[in-house]
Image (cartoon, rainbow, N blue to C red; front, side, top):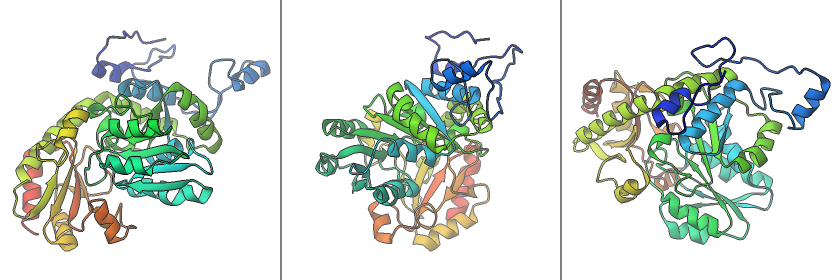
Length: 396
């Protein structure tokens, strides 16, 4: 039983209904197909299924009705031709890049990346003969200078984790395409609601669906979005053979998370803006960066590239590491965790957690100083959060 859909439905409606195929039982919620494999009516049918000559599913490592529903729904949200879900966000990043390169190729990436993403391009790929050049992301001249004849892929995140640095996606896409390379964008901090990298010229978009898409601390997941040619070609082959597959249960949780994504992110962003404005001139705050404020160093780019702010705030408190630790330990409502995009407000100290493997000078290049704290704003009442933050800052 197919849910009736119209092509002119608005985004919020599609996030509730897109991709649902009801079983003969007529269930209200999407069905959870918690199965490893599928049976065939005949040996001939199995052969045709594996030759892609017959529609249907063969093995959940390849695909599954629940997983396919999540992929169809988030593709509709992103405006992508196709999507593939993975077990984690890092599985999505790794698969997206590795499936585009081979020995002898070259990758250019922004210097300000999540620690694990930077490890993939800086440490992992060179083991297999793929070289990498890191550049200052906002500096388009550095992207141009880094391009080589063997450059096949570029990678960036914007806003960056955790310093909320912005990169001109359209500008980098133009440079990459002129060199015959592709651009992959990690869009986690902007969410699919506030920034559309594919519309700006990117070729591939990746998410840790663990973050805002689940947004309630329940499960891990990732997703890759691009053209049908890429998704069903090199990416599908890589995923099929290496197996970073998402579980149907996690895909079902993420599918349900998409139903409330606009409501949650809009509320979190409103609260984040309120907190950023309230704390900006606090005497214990050395620097505060928030994409929704007019004083962001790249505010003009944000106006061109994003339609909303962020659920994230970067706060550098006085006193370096010790000041940051005193601040975090004094929080009572906001909890210390390295996750983000959650219904619960969370705080982390990047230089000793997510980016601790980097030398201090490398962290400084990425805008990560010892006093920097990354705040992920949740769904609590904004005044309760402000009270918690100001009381904790008084302990710095």
